[in-house]
Image 1: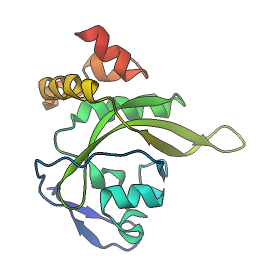
Image 2: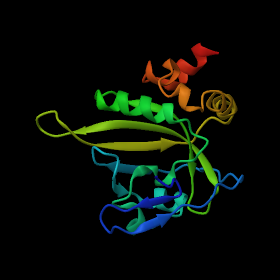
Image 3: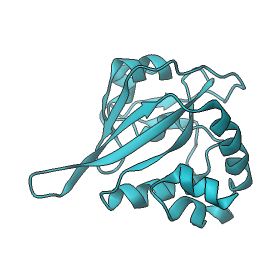
Length: 172
């Protein structure tokens, strides 16, 4: 059985222990937070701002699955929908609550798109983050809590649109 609090780095084979969530928010103050992954979601690049915000070192991040900073409040359906959309070479954006190494959390508005080779084949993904709208976070938190269970993993709220925020507005 997989332990959600242990992540294995695919390069070093080192086990990285994630903290239990702490109900304390760290506000993302802006700047550029960028990550790149391979086609399986393994981090290949994490810029300085991302490392600072998450508390993980470059050595811990490069080779680790991007789920290293997944907060348990995030519904699995949100990520299933994200993978479906970015695998179709479309841009996905949505609000994400992330877990820092110290267990604190932060919210971001994430934009993810495929990286393509010269033949148009997906070779990875790149994600950038913006400061989220505080009022939207309140709405999103309620929706995420409502659709958190495994029975909602394929719910249309997560699968129908690459414009996640507009879809949420329509579903209310």
